[in-house]
Amino acid sequence: MNDWNELRLVLAVQRAANLTVAAARLNIDHSTAFRRLKALETRLGVRLFERLSGGVYQATEAGQRMAAAAERMEDEALALDRDLTGRDHRLSGRLRVTSSETLAYSRLTRHLAAFRQVHPGLVVDLSIDNRVLNLSRREADVALRPVRPKQGDLWGRRLASIAWGLYATPAYLGARERPSMNAKSLAEHALIGWDEGVSGIQAAQWLAQAAPEDAVVYRTNSLVNQLVAARAGIGLALLPCYLGDTEAGVVRAMPEPVPDLEGELWIVALADLKNTARVRAFFDVVGDGLSREHALFEGRGGVVGD
Image (cartoon, rainbow, N blue to C red; front, side, top):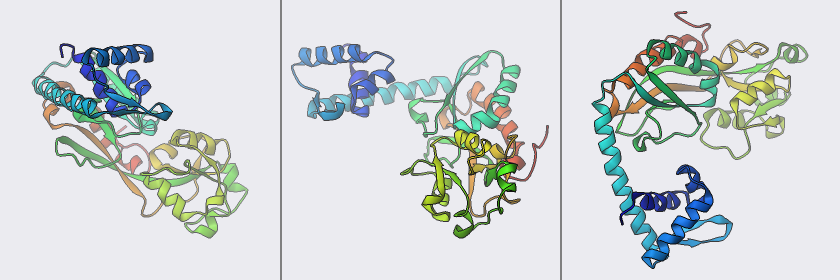
């Protein structure tokens, strides 16, 4: 096996179980991926994947063995990359950052602007993704996450608690009795919620338990769009206070945040990269900047330190 790209293709297809998705992750088109995989199987004289209905690619025993070997090679390459990058003391180059849509929309970008002013030699690549990207596989260098990191190879710090509240337009709230935290009261309102079947989102679970399903009149998997819907007068939206409190056109339906619904904001990087100059600089400028806004994140008022 002389071409690492052949192993990368097999590994990508095995992980995605779909050729189109694998091709996109490798930044090649579907036809190129199909041609390369077919040529590899022809040259080796073995079938690496079974083509199933629905575009599913299932690795054969030979495909699994090749993917496992490719993954070991990838792990070695990533370890070497982390080792070399961790010794990099230059304040130049690219820094790949991942954040949720909500944080990027509301608070993060202004801090990225401040970071660029202090360190103009650094280029920031921001991936807005509500999934938890794999830092060990270098899908990003730094992550801003609403959950405490659990993997032992990650290093980070907690920036703030995240409070949540119910928000609507003043006109909406002026036309009806304000809600309280019980199912009977919430049932009398038009609620904005998440797509049915969503999992792993604490706020979505709280809303599903606190309010009857037929009270939800609008659903979307985007918190930013939930804000837009509330601002348009559709109804009540459950939003993080750092988003709702800073947006013109909506106000809190109740003075205090929702009890027992509190998240966290963490800034996280690989432990191997914590001494890298650009990672430390990002923690110092962006991490500290967000931390100074802890009162806003915690639903206790305006921005601190501005």
